Image (cartoon, rainbow, N blue to C red; front, top):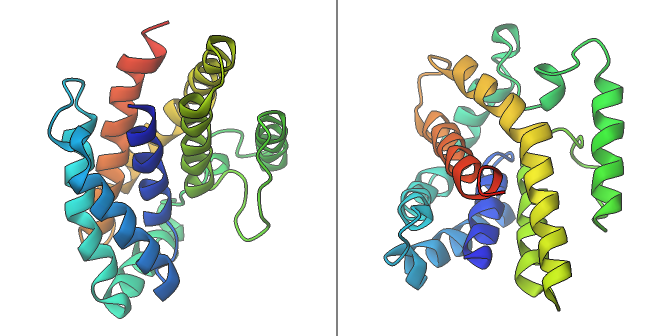
Length: 204
C-alpha cells in the first residue's frame, strides 16, 4: 500500500499547483494510475476509494486549462483577503513564517529530499510531495529498520505539520470561490489525512 499512498500524495500535491500544460500531463498520468491500480478496488483501509475519487476529479483539473487556471487564481490567489492560502505559515506561526519554513527545510534535508526554489517549503504541494517521498522510502526500504524509519518520519511529519494546519485550511476554504473543483480537491486531501491519522499515526 505504500506505493499507492506514494502516488496518492503525489497526485494531491500536483493538484494544488498552478495548472500548466506539462503539469496537466503528469497529473493525468497519475490520475489514470490511481484509477487502474489493483488497490483502487481491493483496499479494505479505504485508500482505493479516495484514490478513485481523486482520479475521477483529475479531468476537471486538467481538461480545460484556461478554466482551471481561472478557478485556481480565484481559490488560492484572489482570495488572499479571506486567508485561504495553502501555506502552513498562514495558519501556524504566522508571526514568524521563516521559523516554520526553516524547520521544514531541516526535516526535508534530514530525510534526504532536496527541494527546488519554485515553491515555498510550507506550501501544501511541497508538504504533500514530501509525504509521497517518505512513502517511497518505505516501499523501497532494504530492511525492516529502514522501513520503520520511513514510517516514523511519516508519523512525525503528519503529527507536527499536515494534521495540525491542513484541517484549519480546509475549514477556512469552505465557501471560497464559485468553482468547486478545488474545494473538492481540498476535501479529498483532508479525508486522506483523516485516514492517515487512523492508519499511520494511531497505529503506533
